[in-house]
Image (cartoon, rainbow, N blue to C red; front, side, top):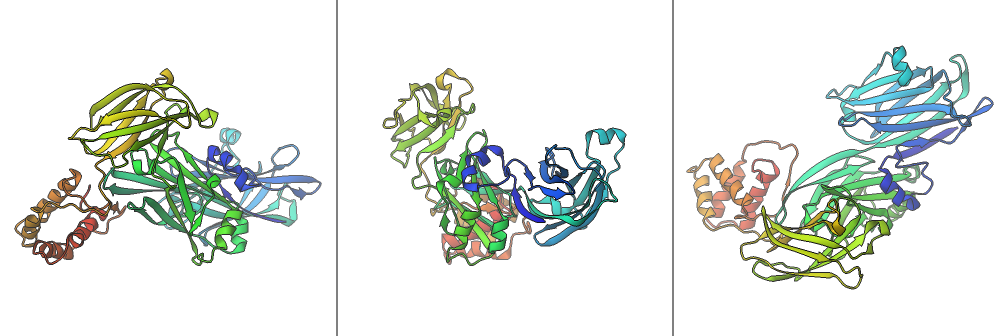
Length: 517
């Protein structure tokens, strides 16, 4: 009998929260899959496939184990024929004999295009602690994650002379997480690094729409019913730095190919100190729903993450994981030299976000200076918030940090939230007039490339010159300044083109790492 499954290994916290939407997933999210029992002679046997990361490496171990269903004892003298594919490309097709019924494949990323399969020699002491059959599989195909399809045929068991007719035949898809990082230069919050962890396939076309605060990316997907029925779970994670206030809102909305995902499929994990992790976990029914969308015509899936409805409140969890701070303010456009009213709510995470009354210390920090401090107490009510009024100093502009400490006297209960003073419109471009002179001199070769570019880089970093947020390419094509950009600078200096045309050249230089901001 043949069994076919696609496994997605997420982390346990999110899998438990989303289990009701996944259905009978045989332990998805736990890092292992136990396939249905199969009759072998007079006993039932079970194949287990499990996947494990080796910390601080790009290596992953895949275990194949055949054992008696009733006793859990592994079956001896098993012959495995294992074929592996990724993105419809054959990686290897090998046969292994295991005296103890366990085969461990160690997938090792190298620079070689060729897949090399090497069986390890196991001595007496090694076999006492490790599987009898250990195999190194090396190649650059393992440098990235995605869906690995394994066809497993078991032809002998209990004795190498005991040929199984017909053989046990399985198809298993294992999703190995693939991580990518994407740098953007936000006009208000500065340099930020967003991350994506996907458990199905490599992503493409990552972008951040700063005006609408939408993070989007796509990945290939076969929308055939056959493929959907084999995909039990699809898991995506968006990593947001906690310094990026625009995406620290309480609720995140996700759509896939234009279809709004139900709230119960989206989980926000704020328990990390550095990043919040937004999990999207979809099951077969969710994929079928997307496939029925008339707009769903491409062989890909496009994800969009954005704040749900309102930009406020911002939300974060204390370092000890007990309390959640919800922060709003009026007026929403915080201005230097003006009063701002901060509205603060505290809930207990362990009590399913029940409002609680606790003492806390609040500091407002600008750069390396503390510009406000106060001890206060939350109301413990849903309908009322603790109110803090603060006059923003005239010389404060850009991000300020609201730092909450010592909630309920616990020195581990700390949390921060960033707020922008004098928010700059994403569409806004600000270029001091005198830069036109420099651009003209550069176009006329009176200033060399290095001096002009270093000057532009400094002005952007210091906020003197403002350009729209621009993602930096991970692998710039060239460090050479294209001739058209220099020509643009001259035309701009002569008022033959507008600011937007000149800035498009600056954005090109930022994207390709020639200007670093």
